[in-house]
Length: 123
Image 1 (cartoon, rainbow, N blue to C red):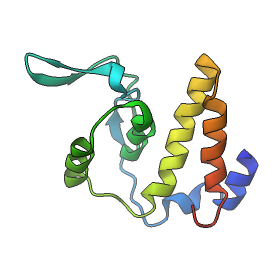
Image 2: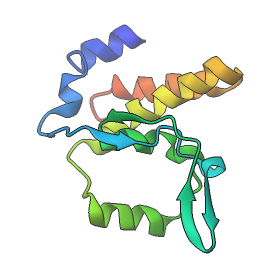
Image 3: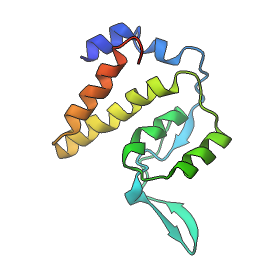
């Protein structure tokens, strides 16, 4: 499947056409278990920090538990780049595969479905 993804996306290049990727400091493990409030102020903790494309942070959104107002506020600060919805499948597949590696279970099926979307022309 990975070979099909690479072939279909020209080694992932087509996923990033027209997008200027500026490395950002990412939390890397931003899910509901790593966010809280302290004295009424939001805080995040337990990072797996690295530099990467800011969109990669969305890869954990399936278990982050952020409401629509959070994402709307995010998009006010950082508008959605062309092709984001397609790249989102790649970023989420990374985390699903990582969870499969750590915990087993249904994560492999989820990752496979996400990667399969990248092989489709309308993905």
